[in-house]
Image (cartoon, rainbow, N blue to C red; front, side):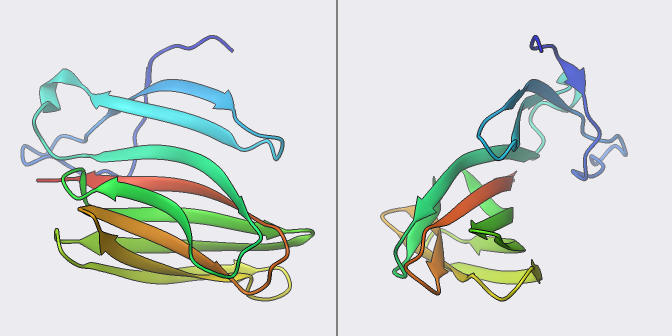
Length: 159
């Protein structure tokens, strides 16, 4: 499919003037063997330039065999105040999906995990930290069997 720009209404919310933010979808393409799709969104309708907005990123999948913390996302503190993640972890035929909210203030990071669904048991847990001027989202698998994480980040730009 050729790239084309279309406007997509998302849950970004109204601007101070009451208008809805409309990000521009730049790209829609398959990214991996699991048939996950990547949507690249950038910019805003010119009427809303300068307002804070969410940026949606399909992050590169991560596969690990470690029970130690595995970085799923690292972003500079000046990039986002908060981020919401949709994460699918998969090990063989076992699947877990979770949503994670992360908030950072330039020195500390706090997260909460919710909407946890799984096919046959918890596969992992998540943690947030702040180091080297960056917010970090980590996954902790409960076994050394190969676990694959597919992540979508909804980041709130700094106001």
